[in-house]
Amino acid sequence: MAAPPQREDQQTDVVIVGAGILGINQLYRAVQAGYSVRLLEQADGVGGTWYWNRYPGCRFDSESYTYGYLFSVELWQEWDWSEEFAPQPETERYLNRVVDKFDLRRHIRLNSKVTSAVWDEGDATWTTRTEDGFEVRSRYLISTTGVLSVPQYPDVPGREDFAGETYHPVRWPKAPVDLKGKRVAVIGTGSTGVQIGPAIAGEVESLVMYQRSATWATPLNNHPIDADQQAHLKANYEPIKAELDASVGGFLHKPAGKKWVDDTPEQRRAFFESVWNSPGFAKISTNYEDLLFNTDANADWCAFMADKIRGIVNDPATAAKLIPTDHLYVGLRPPYVTGYYEMYNQPNVELVSLRDTPIVKVTETGIETSDGLREFDVIIWATGFDFGTGAMLRMGIVGEGGLTLNDYWADGPLTYLGIMTHGFPNFFFPGGPHGAAGNNPRYGEHQVVFVQDVIDYARDHGQRRIEVPKADEQAWMDMIAQLLPYSSFVKRGQYYGGNTPGKPVAYLLNPGGRPKLDEFMTKAVQSGYQGFLS
Ligand code: NA7
Image 1 (cartoon, protein in one colour):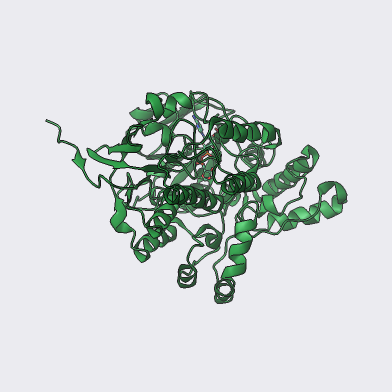
Image 2: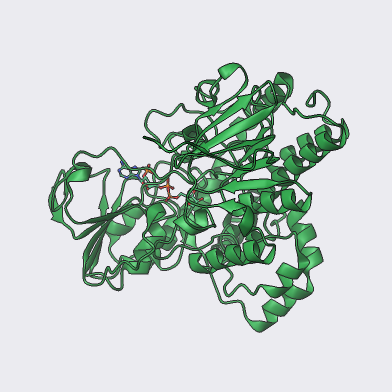
């Protein structure tokens, strides 16, 4: 007989789902504001993305100190990031340190995968249940389950038949994986696959990268943070925080302040060279201001990158395969790499273009493409995520009148600020679909603060129910539709759900970015959340 549900914390004010970077931030704020909180996390540790993604080569491509928390100057002063772009183990340590420093662990229940969350209109509460039978009622339900948390495996015939080791980077084992001397296949050359390749190419016997689409990968340009930079960071907490809080992308990169149309061809080459040598996402944020709005400018940058690829990769046929021909820069999420193109000059590394020779099937011993079978000891499926809505639509969320979130979002998510959805009172999802695009923790933090503020406001005004009016949700959706033509992303990528078979094609980011997010938030706050509270 199934064990009866364990009822705990009947009066819990807030349930948060997910102990990733935003869940920990939300927990910190809710505890500080004096609420009783229960955070449910499906893993056996905290960290979210930085718990699950322990694959070789996993690291930030946002600068470490811009990604961490800014809510505590003491934390800022005591934590030394070792590199401009920190590796995963360091970030996991950092998040554990934060949880301990602010005494948050006692509010967290690990190994708690949420299977249902149901709204009860009568007493205005949510009842949340987990896979192991735990049940908790709360006034508020906050999902911080992330946009990149549900791994995606492709529907390739015979995938289960392979008798060797298989891994998905997002479920990489905690125990060390020994790839030394093994024949390894990596499927997928998105941001993840191109981090894994160079990290393992030196130790494996052979590495075959299976590429369906080439991407515009550029150098990460990482470096250790030396004592001088460390001192500079410590001395400048206030101005750095102010700049990050105000910047459009959540980065410290300085805009170029010029357009491609205004430069000569020689000036463009010199400028692109400096952009190529800049760190991470500066390739976008310090590039020409018309880069993403002027096809000629973007094509010129792509031609520059193509020359770079041909200059690094010795074999012209391999170089040609690595150069995208179906999208311009930021048509897909651009990866940032260390030693990626260079690795193809190693004799044990090979690139297979699945556009030329598609996969026929996976067999017990390897991968068969249209030009034959290659045998492997290990296959790594770096095939991405069910982006944006993947986790939330697997949580069994039921709102007003028995409406399921899956039904309400059947044609794509309908949100307000990427935080709330009509018909699901007292439910929030900072860091969910329709958030801004950029350095996630920065605009996500604005969303976390908005959620905490509206809950505080309801408490202070004796209201117990918060629901976004349909008209406000529609206004946000209209903004997305109006600005969508300015988005550079192509429909087949994750940001439209186009990478996930069977998913409706609907834009999952906020094309108005942080400026629109902040504008709508300010309006709601200044109106006293008019129409939201009852
Ligand atoms: P991505 O960027 O979605 O990349 C997934 C890769 O897997 C991409 O190259 C895909 O090719 C490839 N893929 C997906 N399905 C298949 C099949 N069926 N056959 C062959 N290849 C396939 O995910 P990542 O994990 O690399 O990066 C995601 C995030 O990491 C990123 O947004 C950052 O925030 C960090 P395709 O392009 O679809 O042709």
